[in-house]
Structure formats: C-alpha cells, structure tokens
View (cartoon, rainbow, N blue to C red):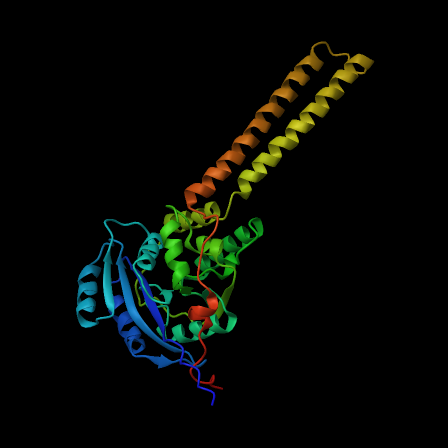
Length: 338
C-alpha cells in the first residue's frame, strides 16, 4: 500500500515596513495585515501565514515610535527595529530583511497604498513561476500625481536602455523575496546600493503580480524633489560600471586616432603637403599627448570599476540550498481554486 506524501511545511512570511512618518497610517496598515496572522490556504493551494511584521524606525519627524510600541504590545507578531538615525528607505528595508527569519520576506510602504490582501497572490505567483523575487505590478497609475509618475517611468526606461539586465521598469517597493535571498543581500550590500539592483545580482528569475495601488492615506509624500533625484542617481550608480567602461573605450579609441593622425601629419610634412612651419610638431605632440592621457584615464576607469563593484558588495557567488528542499519546492496542500 502506497503511503500518502507528507504535507508540505507551511510558508512563513515576514513583512518589513520602513517607518519614517507613519503616525497617521501605520496602525491601519498593521490592522489590515492582522487577518494574515491566522494561517490560510491561498487560491493556488499553498498554506501560508504572516509570522512576523518588522517595523523599522527610520527616525522620522512624527510620533511613529509610540504607534510602533502600541502595535508591538497588541500583536505578538509585530516587532520594532530601531535605527540610530535616518538612513533612508532602502537601508531601513535591508535592516528589516536582516532581522527576519521567515521563508519569505514582503516589503511594503507605511502609507497604506499597498493592499496586504495581495500577499497570498504574490506567493502563488512565486510558486507558479518558481521566482525568487515577485514585484507588484500596478494595474492603475501610482497615486503620486501625473508629473511624478511620468518622471519615474521615464527615468527607469532611460536607465533600462543604458544598462541591460534586470527589468528596471518593474521595480516596486511592494515585493516578495525569498527569505534566504533577502537576508543574503542585506548582509553584503554596501552603502548606497539600490536594493533591487542588489537583488538582481544573485537572483535570476523575477516575476510580477497584478496589484491595484491605493491612495497614500491622505499623508504627504516623504520624498522631496531632491530626495527623488538622489534616489534616481543611486539607481544609475548601482546599475553597473558601464559608464566607466565607456570612458575606457573612449580613451583607447582617441589614443589610436591620435597615433594615426600624428603619423599622417609626419608623412604629410615629409611629402611636402603640409608647409606650415611648426604645425606638424605641434599636432604630433598634441595628438599623442591627448591620446596618452585618455588611454591612461581608460586604464584608471577599469581599476575604478573593479573598486566600485567591490565597494557595492557585489558577490562573486552566493551559496544556497537545494531549491526543491526549500519554500519553492513545496507542493500545494489543496488543488488550485478556479
């Protein structure tokens, strides 16, 4: 008689919420998460539970700490993580990831625009696509205003064209990440690294899940124009060293052209086609000098590129377990619902 297969372990989820000015909205966000503290079976048949909620205090201007304390007292699953100063959203998110211990990590904002009911659907997407990272794909315009939405899309598209690789356009702060990947990224990422770029360094399969974004709870955005510009520039700098490689190629190209033109100037002087006294020597010195300088800058750019990759914490490899033995290898406990 064939024995029935043992049931797959329950998927545990840690929700990480960076808190900067969540005094007005954070309580409602956690209250919406509360139903997921009770185990449930997703539409795809996967047993899951939100086992921990990590509220990472990023030293904002309001009385978020008191709200965090009261929520931690009310819900055993809620835990506050206290940072020494304001480090920014990405750093606070990494701190929450590093403090988690669940199979999966969900990152979401404090302002209420991310619906917690999408978490089971994101888990189903991860299991169906066997993806280590799932981004929420907005089915409606983000509630930030036309100008900011247009600027965000344009900036991401521009970087995507310059830097092939991860689907930058799909980057979203509402994301589901395999726990081992999230904690590893939190361990090695250097200061100023764009979180989603770091996730792309070690994860090859990314999926998206349709999610409708909501209004931000009537609270003004914590991002000023200067902060948004800084956010975009960090994305550019974290996206790789292609710009430095272009400097290197430009230096080599100009150096070669300089030698060619210098040789041409000397030949022209010898053949008598260039009669201007002193012109040939000036051009030879200038072209060879500029070529040498740009070639040297190209070599320096290559060394800088190696240093940049090292300082950002990009690993040469990441060891993980057999995926069939981890969360992605678990079978549904019930047939998917129609």
